[in-house]
Image (cartoon, rainbow, N blue to C red; front, side):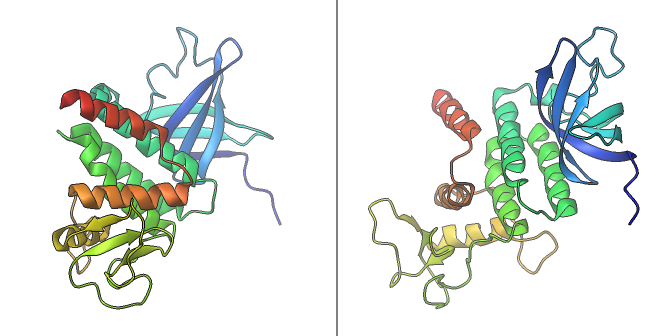
Length: 251
């Protein structure tokens, strides 16, 4: 079997970066070709670097890359879409960090890369243009869970399989919503009224599918999505706490 070519090109989103030595940076990228990749850009911190302004947080870039033994090397970068100027709003900036944190964390497992890339592409553009960027997170989170094979059951009870016709409860351990007979008997159990259940289903609906998709979440539906996401991730995204603090300040 022949070895893969050392040089390749791909589109990518810049998820995060850290300094290396005096002039370099290591970037964590989500690429259209290979999923998550760590790559170094040499000399990027120099004033006259040809990378200046081209590898900003959450920019979509067309990269020329070279496979390395430990790290790939970025040899060229051109901006495809740049949202940095519109992400200076604290809510948009923090929401974008939640997106980056989730993709970064979940990309440790095998992923359907084209689907995840498309989700991220749509979400970043929407967040940059939204009046309420944080309100877009529940749909992205549910669609991400679905792409990973973790979509919560929302049509029938996750415990007994009975159709969910009205209120339901979020049961993260069972992997979906539960009916009244099977509801979790815990003080912190999240209950959803009929309209919240309908909203929860619409948030997870694929565009162009039989069910009309929703982009905005009711309060209970958003809390349920957050519970399922936290369960599968093993923790709540750290940037989500900053969003909570921002919401409190605005109130």
